[in-house]
Length: 262
Image (cartoon, rainbow, N blue to C red):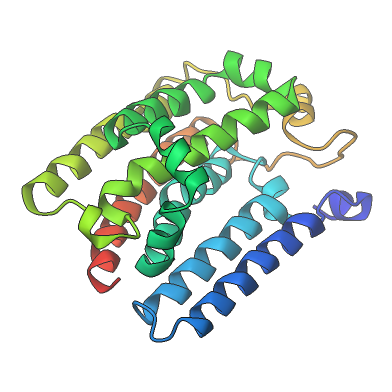
């Protein structure tokens, strides 16, 4: 860690910080000019989501998340299962109605996938992303990898839409919600089980192990060393699957609770 810090690898992404700051200021200005806004809780949720996104993708936590499977999956779980519903629930319904009426948004609405289709697409791409051979290919092409993650991030918003839409009238309730939450858990489960089973049988090599993998995942020329046992072992893989499964369920449960107050 100290070596990496001295090498300047654990840095903060200033452009992304400015972007998050700009979005936050615009949001607060809108809220102030449109009193009374929908819910008092909404600004807290939105700003928490935006700054959590920055900490995960633009701070030294990004580099640290690649030091082990469990750290990586916690980072990915927050990115895809916690941040999207926070941001969606934090958008005032009045702002959403104005935005959705814009000609540009009206045109691209036709390109949006149905939530269930987005859920299936996300689950498939997310599972594929964590196969070692596929991750190695993506890691050799940073632009492609970033685009892949961006697609996953956008899909995560769409898959949370039925239970976290900024417009409460667009949300599903009762039995439909229970069914959708259950289906979401089932579709995400294969990616979680992949880590747990591979850890139990030690049948899959950790793509973050070794100097070559570290070079692919961390900044070029980095001297960051991987963590000692029990990290980066079969137990770490099992923990990664458990963390991901738990955070996904936590994200669904948190969304269902918060949406009642938004």
